[in-house]
Image (cartoon, rainbow, N blue to C red; front, side, top):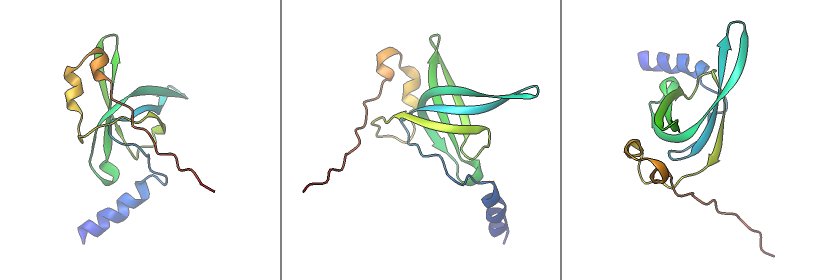
Length: 123
């Protein structure tokens, strides 16, 4: 009974068009930031290293390097503060969590790009 009630309450908070991403993707996350009465969009670029949770509690973690220091930020998938998520490139990964990137620096943090298959119509 309580599980069904929770699902009904969560359904109203879910995004109509869910964000489409995979672990290892380089993304630009556009977030809404309130400064006084004004609202602006701030972009956080990086690699998605983890995803966890389900329903309204689903989150993803993005990592980037700023001035030689690693910065990680966790975003809720269904938050209205996340305005848009752009996938810049897809990375080839064989793990669900990319925490091993934390110890790496420089070129070692790059992931190979996953190529998309292009469907051609033959005559």
